[in-house]
Image 1 (tube, rainbow, N blue to C red):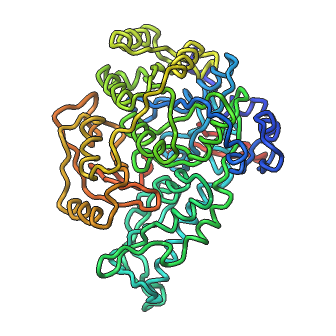
Image 2: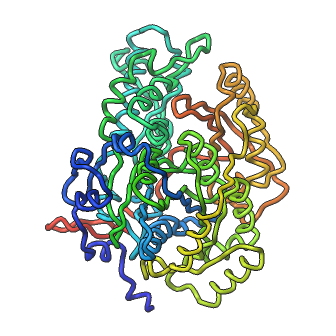
Image 3: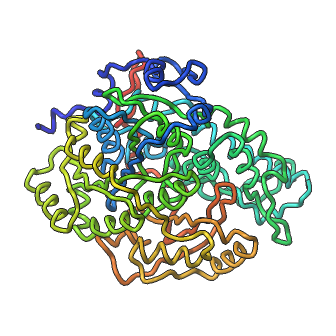
Length: 543
């Protein structure tokens, strides 16, 4: 196809004929009282569905992951949506469960996260910009706690927090490097609060985001919010959000955000778009509630986890599946010619090994991009098959579900096999050993080195009783190592841990490696500069 004739995602989405969300919900068997319409094509669904369908058997859960990606991504969401459409085309009752896009990447370099071409979830503009306001609600709930903490210090309330030991930064759903480190409480002779160092992270890395995604109910959400560590006293005792009384108001702000958002794919497949943690900082998966609800409403559920199998997939298996009591039936490993050219077959093999560590059968989707040469894709398929991988070339962007029917049949066949799913490590294993297991088995490292400050933090976390939590590694997505410049399948390296932080409410310990940042910056020419709106309200430039 002539590149000049390539149709943009937004043009394709705008021409699609969508059905009312209530009609989609009705076909799923949802009751009127369980449907909360947000306009014509979006609806929130009450978690009460889970109680009503408690005895209904779960469908098969399929995870889409990838090899180490390039900066532009390899089309996991497009593959997720396309595969679901292909399964539906073959007569299988299917649902999609994916994350909500962050405005950071949308306005930065990667663009939207609603899929692409003829494998998108709709309405594309709403999903990529604000949807139903969930991420805004998470930002406000997070920043409410920040405001309460600073007021708690200013008012000298008990328990007394050490201003130099506040553990709760602020968040915003935007890439804004100038906010990474700030000073609050300036001037005013104390009227503006206590002066101290602070900073902003992106909302996708917020512990509140992780809590929303890992909670099974509103009651659990509130309880988890109360466990958040706000900071420490002068004697280094942790002070929780419940001790300063903020969890009730925070949960109230998330009353509607906990309800999954029901939309549809371009071919009418029902989709939940709910929750949006990054996988290089947080655990990279959509909400447990949306996934569980999908499994009660469909026979096949296709979901995704961010970045490569070293990040999103590992956290999906070790954190999300553990807290959600989920048992995945199959996985799909996305490979592209551009990522293959950068990283090679050994990178694909390593990610295949990573999935295999969890006992989940998988197939490879060689995701075609416009401009890919057929002989290159065939060569990649040949190399994958020569190493024992079941590989299929797919073209979900240009052909929708019809672009990968062979893969759909292969994945459905995998789902019929007995699942041998297992997590990578037991929770009783010490934090250091869990991290060593992830680093050696998943990344291929020789071991882990902790900075002196990280060693102190690790010892304190164990002493405080957080040693039995799973580990969430914050690491670059550009390499299996913690050095983004090491392509392929690096060997002979160690993982360097700069610090540890406990997300007590979310229920995991975060290990920060390399030079990972929790607030990304914008590129030289951000995507935001191409986005516009006309007098009739039509948006252009989203991709």
